Amino acid sequence: MAKQQALEKDVNSFEDLRKEIIGAGLCGRCGGCASFCSADEMHALGFDRSEGPKLVAEDNCLKCGICYLICPQIKALDAEVREKFGWQPPIGIHSKMVSACTTEPKVSEVCTDGGVVTSLLRHALKKRLIQGALVSKRMGPFSRQPFLATNPDELIEAAGTHFDEVQHLGEFGKGYSTYSPTIQEIKKIDQLRLDKIALVGTPCQIYTVRKMQVLNIVPADSIAFTIGLFCMENFTFDSKAVAALEKKLGVKLGDIAKLNIKDDVILTTADGQVHHVPFDAVDEIARPACMACPDFANDFADISVGGLGSPDGYTSTVIRTSLGQKFYNGAKQDRVLKELRLPSKEKARLHRTELMAKITAFTRRKKARARATLARIKQVG
Ligand SMILES: Cc1cc2nc3c(=O)[nH]c(=O)nc-3n(C[C@H](O)[C@H](O)[C@H](O)COP(=O)(O)OP(=O)(O)OC[C@H]3O[C@@H](n4cnc5c(N)ncnc54)[C@H](O)[C@@H]3O)c2cc1C
Image (cartoon, rainbow, N blue to C red; front, top):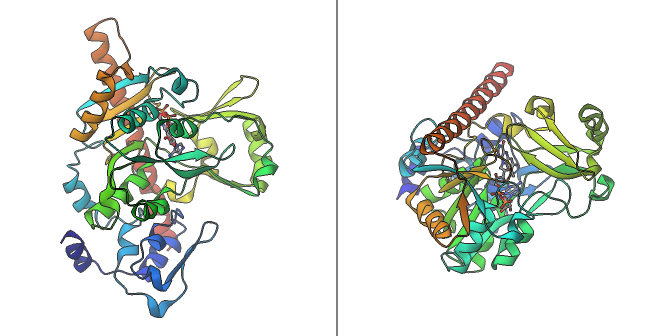
């Protein structure tokens, strides 16, 4: 029904997507439009990660509008998504905000911040709340591939941003991207006949999932739990940009052993040196699509997480929905997760206020950047 109403309201097609998004340089190449095309079996749309989507058999296009509506850059379903998921300003609904960390040594050895994501999912799998989790496994210093983990140990492989071996960049081909094409993988959930899957994603990915749920696109109903990462941007760069980047950052990219993003971009080299790089310094390698994205705190996830605002070794955890509460409370009760201990109630209250203030400030900053990007594009025509 929701799908029908949305389609009747707005029957833009791939041609509109080409003009408004692809032509404006805002396509994030998530592959969602081609993967969930209603004329998929007739191969109406083609998709290539380096070139993005294109209409390959125009006569086969059903002009149903799905490709247009599910694109994360299209805001046509904003009101429906906000209503369905109870969005409230300024960062979406939330019932609790806390700095937490794992108690599992094998998770804390490999995790990005406090290992909340990995331990929450491991616990949910062990308790059979989910059958699997669509996460992103590291393939090299900067690249990730979507990966459906169906046992708790497979989640360890996908945790963190430590690189087991520092590798020469030349070994990874000519293009690098921190973006992991998770949306395309959702299709496989249906083929595997799984109906209780968790998904970890950036704000654009969770937003796409929520739009698919509004539109009743199969198998979005099988995504039973979402963990959203805070996100300023993903990075894409080619081998040509590497030398310029290394000069600017004063770090050999091949020496980076850990990449983390909190208040800024944190690069740790194999010799243990930590370099803090402000976002402005790396904006030129941010994916153009990210510069137009207004969502920092992953407003529509069940639980959102980031490093921002928490001490090292902790994950800032925003519990939003009742499902988020159920998963988080279960893991906490079973002592898989623990919260940052502060010496007094007053200090704890202050910490929560500071956490909220930081997340809100980054949200405002990202929204302002998106507005400026879209205004610039409009001006250029
Ligand atoms: C591209 C990107 C940008 C981010 N930007 C910020 C930021 O600006 N500020 C901030 O505070 N936090 C940011 N984060 C979140 C932060 O880096 C941590 O992921 C988060 O704090 C969770 O830490 P953890 O130790 O609990 O997670 P872990 O237990 O280490 O688990 C990390 C999970 O993230 C998944 N993952 C890793 N890379 C990707 C990817 N590229 N796409 C989708 N999923 C992925 C892994 O599969 C794993 O399930 C960003 C994360 C990413 C991937």
